Image (cartoon, rainbow, N blue to C red; front, side):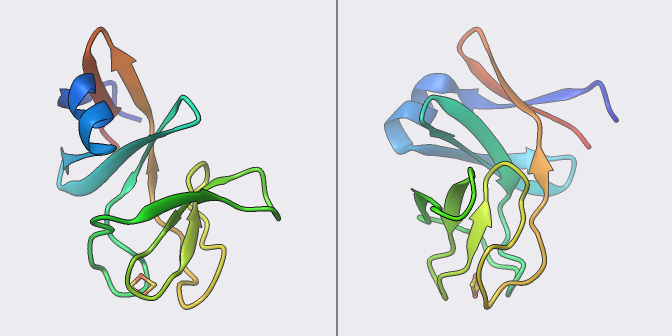
Length: 110
Ligand code: FES
């Protein structure tokens, strides 16, 4: 695994907008904060390859996962593992390591 960390923006931006997106070595990545924990995941739904855009976050009673819900057809993905929890998505999305360093949000390159 790479030791390079890519700066995606200011933590204040994440707080203001609820999410930050950016390019991590050619991967489109979205970072969100849920219950005080940062999550970084591939910003492409595995159902059709489009960005999650203004996707809602939720919890799932069947898993300990925080969940991102695709705004187009409602597939739910675990924020911790990337697993597809509900159809019409069946393939996972990639998860990235993310940290807050000082006032910056950084994501580990794959
Ligand atoms: S595009 Fe995401 S569920 Fe269909």
